[in-house]
Length: 220
Image (tube, rainbow, N blue to C red; front, top):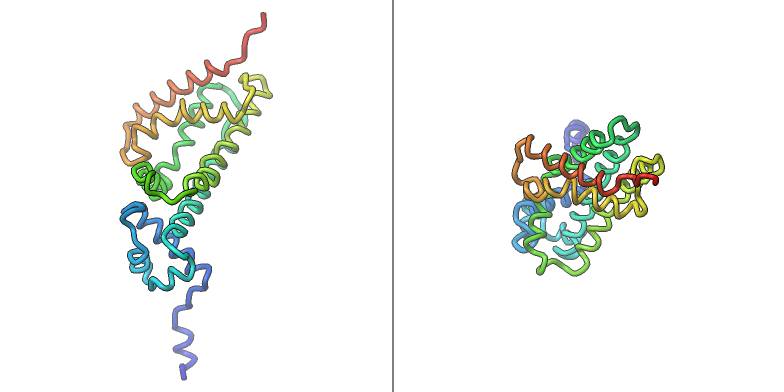
């Protein structure tokens, strides 16, 4: 029978919720490093210091494990971008400068969530081998949610007469394509660190094109 002293010094056992989170975090690192094709449940179990049976208790197969990793990771990125959208363009002093500041902040998840974007890079190379429906669910949980928050902020600029926007979702798509996508593509989703001057030039040119596209039409 254990003594009170032994009981007091014994490390607490992780509950089911914490153990599941630990497995997901470990799987995120494994998928980021090895991709969908080469990652195995056995590798995840080994690095999580649990048995494959324990992983199977929470996730019936590797497909479900990947989906859980993608959804949780994408939701975290979307939450970060929601904060970015909420904190920018509150009081616009110089439209182009303020949009450029938003563009720089919109790119911060590339460095804040490196494992997520490593998985995104693998996805780009493994599209034909991914389980059916995974991409659609990932898009819904992450990129589309972030775009909705950006659209809401851009709609406020339109309501204030600073932009001429008929479809805020379309405008948000165009902002991401023009202002952020160049940096995302040239850095391979954050794998390469671009010089600051190159990032600034891409953002500035993108903002100029965006404002030109959505500038309020002059009244005759």
